[in-house]
Image (cartoon, rainbow, N blue to C red; front, top):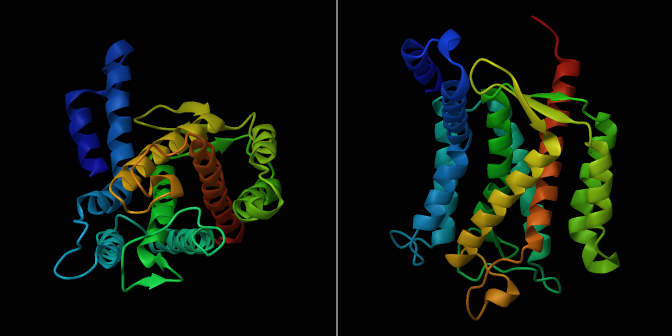
Length: 280
């Protein structure tokens, strides 16, 4: 799809003739198209989440229908070559990491949130579809990396970035017992990525932005999506059991940290693949 739009666009607006406001608007439009394409799984999956009746479909509880929908979307993308097998493996890793966190957060004694509806495909009280909400973040990062030809300048040592990401993940569990150290971790991340820039190509020229800004922006949009999800009752926080209220703004920081962890997973996997790749 991107290639077809590219050919049509260049037939109408030769790249050499683009300058000033026309270049800005063209690149901004093309950036939006690529972002929409990168959000394909996210968009289709959350469309299913928001449009699914509370009572389910065809006699099947909505949690189970959402699992079927997520699987169909995922394998449809693979079948139509919108996603590679390696990318699918990475998405499955995100699903597993997210599901483990969900099980812990909804467990007895923690109850950070709850899935209150019935479902046949609930395991340890958590519907299996929930892991795809984390997989959606991974899918977006992977697709953006490829479609926008992402390159990272001044990336910190991979082992340090990996250690920080691991500490962020562990803090989601341990803060219930030994205190929340997210702001200390955020300070470490700020130091690690202070000089890091993400270079991307909306059209034919490289553009760049601070990677930390990208983390914060993505975290904000996930926080908005979480507000919509809780409004439709997909899951509920304790303060939303009686009546819906806005998700606490502090969750924005949690999601931004989760984005950092997700990005690090993708970056490290790509780095490992480059190191072990043997040219044919």
